[in-house]
Image 1 (cartoon, rainbow, N blue to C red):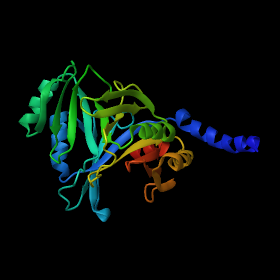
Image 2: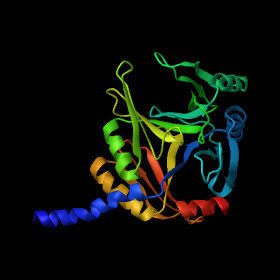
Image 3: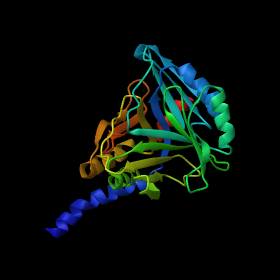
Image 4: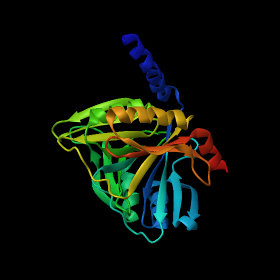
Length: 292
């Protein structure tokens, strides 16, 4: 009996190895804005991002724009969505911030202030430390942390989300998505713990910053922030892994693996145990979409 049970578990063990072997990369974050031109202007003139592409889908009544610090083939970008006639959204209490690394936080803050940026924390060192940072809100109220760092290939360096059980979330992203825990920091004096997770060193690429506030197990999601997209070489196999992990840790598949009608890019989407959405996108199809 024990031998049969062990054999039955073997396919699961093999499947769970797939995310570690797969060619994974965080591609973009999707969120909604009330005025696309206003946000594009703020991001390009203020943050120094480039407008990479823009499209209008009148039959679906929305437009979107992709912005970042480098090409989509290699860099993480933001995908802004404007739904016709909707001028504001509820960000909720769960979404934290995006982060941008810059060589001079003070200079960037003055640039943002000059174009109407809402500086919510003036630049300066962290209490009891040497790291220099600031916080600013964009025209829709999304918070951006500005972190002083040396040159980096990926200035758009963090997406921060709040979670109700940090260990469960770390386990989920490790097992379901093949991410690595890069570091974990506990701040008992401020009653929170955070974990940086991703596919490479946080000074080289984008990472997810998961934050647990002591005693808080649930947050509102609002209707503003949507999801992150992650590249994979096999959407179907990746979907099987996520399905397996959700049975153990929670969360659920929201779109079965398969092509998106009209563009034929193969995707699957799911919610993590806290209800944060991710989309896995076929790497080859993604490049075809970019160049097509």
